[in-house]
Amino acid sequence: MKPLYLIAEIYPHPDKLEAAHNLFSTLVENTLEEPGCLLYDLVIEEDADHWLMLEKWESKAAWEHHMNTEHVVEANKLAASLVRNETKLRFLSGL
Image 1 (cartoon, rainbow, N blue to C red):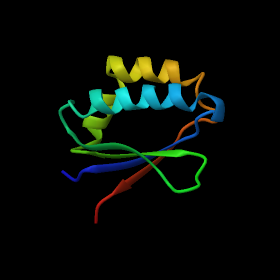
Image 2: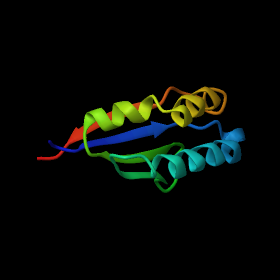
Image 3: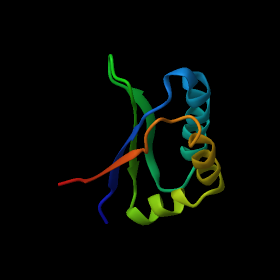
């Protein structure tokens, strides 16, 4: 089974950066403990107005399970007030 790669583009409100960073940092900590998670890291490009969550999962099923965990469901509810645009998800696969 091939791993699933994902890049999530997150657009935090400029006036809520600290709260958003705290929320997503906690999400990273919790997610890294999940079975099937091979990589989960929040990064930013220089001079960018959005963040990237880089993810690698053992399988799509592992990612789907992740999306239904309590900490992700709660984070998504809280994030709604901290972001200015909907998160864009880019799914990739290895060759």
